[in-house]
Amino acid sequence: MNSKLVEEQTKTAQHSIEIKDLKKDLVQFQQTNIKLIKILYEQKKTNDEIMKGNCKLKVGNICYFAVIRDEYYVNYDGAVDICKKRNADVGLIRDEESYNAIMNYTRRNIPKEKAWALIWTGIKIDPMTGDVTPADSFIKWFPGNPRTGIKYKDRTNVILDVHAGPNDRYQGMVNVPPIWVRHGVVCEILI
Image (cartoon, rainbow, N blue to C red):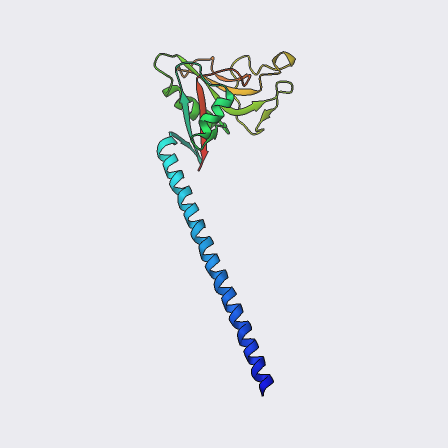
């Protein structure tokens, strides 16, 4: 009888430990969920703020906006920083619809004193091969571009040359060195 009682007490003690462990796990699980909910809420709040302030042009699930000044002031690294400070990336052009929308948006935002704006994109080119990255980028080259070959080996980045007149033949994409300074940058936020 004593051995049965000891065995029951041992089982009860073991169950008690297991219940405490389960309670501890449950509390930890709840705390983790609360943290995740807070993180998701903050991300939604941040996305809402971004959308209010920076979604100047929406194409599909991408919001674009441009930062353009009336003088040349930013190289490619500076363009990356401009977008990052706004929780965005330097914009890519994925298709003709995006290209036309970005060109028209930029055209409307050219400083009044200027007839054109040159802005950075996130598209790159290998001037030795002519290969563009990302490979599925939409490309509409400015007449005479891209500049390729050993003479142009440093022209690895693609800018948009946007003129105020929509029918101006001399506008489109140009490959330039990343150290050149331009009027600004087109940024994007995936939504």
